[in-house]
Length: 119
Image 1 (cartoon, rainbow, N blue to C red):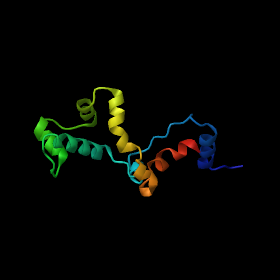
Image 2: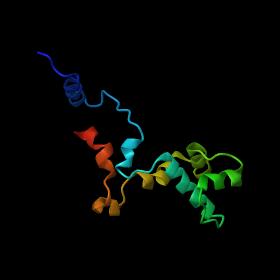
Image 3: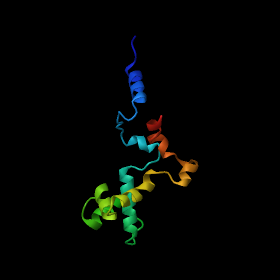
Image 4: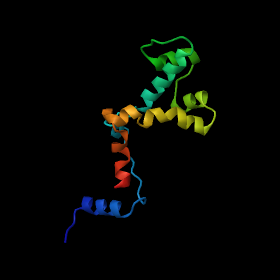
């Protein structure tokens, strides 16, 4: 009997929950309307800029570089905006978890990311 490798893998994944890690590229998030790291950075920078009265920039990353003399990156932004892990979780939650409006049908982030975990 010759069984397709994909079929074997599917059975193994299904039968051994938690035994495998799935490494996916950022493109998997796009269809679920989850922002890319660049988009999250841009939004965080725009919020930082707003505290300085700046609300309309074509390139938030360029504004950050001009303002702070360095390139913005995810980790340094989180370090600047939060001091505890729990604060980071709270700050980032809105980017990755659906709001009530989202749950009412505009988008379902969890379908792309966690459906396969619970099957």
